[in-house]
Image (cartoon, rainbow, N blue to C red; front, side, top):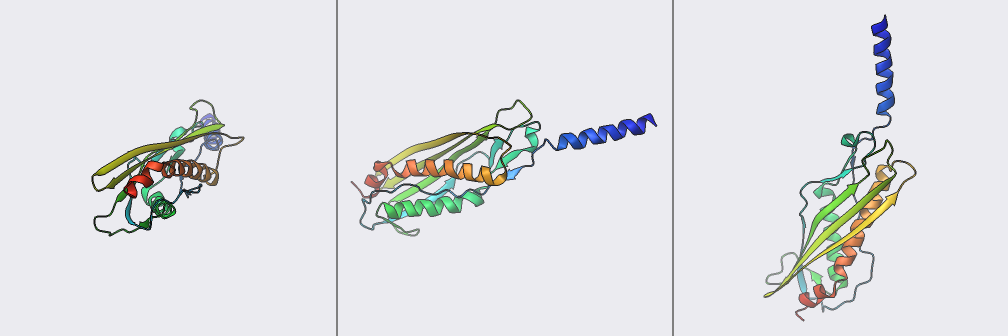
Length: 195
């Protein structure tokens, strides 16, 4: 009888603790270029490529009591097409024409080099997160090459644990900032236009 009561108590405690755990989140961010760019090209073709240079699709965890169950990830197939579209839009705003098969044209490669989401490890509740993104742009035009690294970060505090929609927006915002900083670098347009 005592064993049965003890098992019932353990089961009840287990259910209570599970309520404090978070389930994994797989985000599908929507990065957007959020600044006007100065057109320096005259419609010249540019080959635009996008790559995923991260070690892993995992960004980190949301912390809390069971951080191992609260992983956050962004798969390459969920973010690369959006980055490709934004990189092509940026190249158009710079005055060039994205042309995937152009022969002997200048090339621009955007690499997502890092994406992180970190919450403090201690405590049962998630109260804040540090989110960061890094991108690299490599430009090649004839024998001229240029590489730049650009990053953005955000510290966000929460009243309650963030849901998938909130985290998707936060990661999208940080990615958008890194992307915008990259394409605001005037050297990119100069090298693409052969200046």
